[in-house]
Image 1 (cartoon, helix red, strand yellow):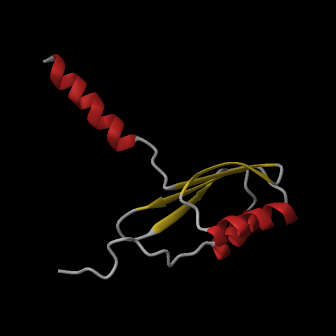
Image 2 (cartoon, rainbow, N blue to C red; image 1 turned 135 degrees about the vertical axis):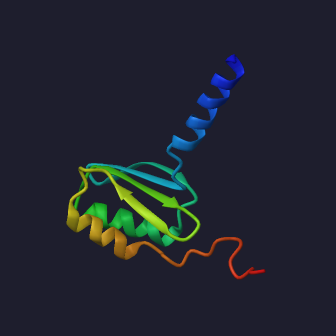
Length: 101
């Protein structure tokens, strides 16, 4: 019985764990923390935007099977969000691209 409870907790932890593929953290217009494989052009573009319009907040990038999604913290202004969306490379090629059965 105890093993079932431990297994249930482990499954819940794996399902609900926050697993972005990229994380960028800005404080007052400066990049303070980055995590993941960030495309060079996207990183330079984000730094440029943060330099011109300083902001604080986090940007997380999630990828599922069909799409890539950007998630911003509440402290990021909407104009900055749009500019970062415009810089984001939507055509990043996954490793399995072009292989269909």
